[in-house]
Structure formats: C-alpha cells, structure tokens
Length: 58
Image 1 (cartoon, rainbow, N blue to C red):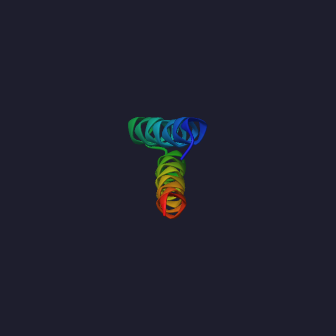
Image 2 (cartoon, rainbow, N blue to C red; image 1 turned 60 degrees about the vertical axis):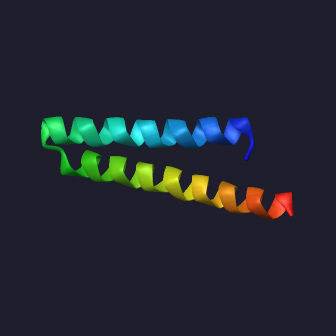
C-alpha cells in the first residue's frame, strides 16, 4: 500500500468520524449515518490495499 493511499484512507476515516460526531451533537441522523458510511469505506479500502500488498510480496 502506498503512502498516498494510506493517508487518503486515514483521512476518509477521520472525516467520517468528524461527521458522525457532528451528527450526534446536532441530532442529525443523516449526517451521523453518512459519517459511519465514510468510516466503513475507509476501512474497506484499507483492507483491499492490504490484500493487494500481501499478493505483491509473494
């Protein structure tokens, strides 16, 4: 996994956490759900990159 990808995925997760927190604070369920979705996308991307890295090492 390249450093750029790691940074982008971490930023997506962090942004999602911020949205979720803001949604909780304001009672905005839509924003909270969007934040959780962004975090899940970041996790999936990180997992995909780890799988690709595992196959590259062989």
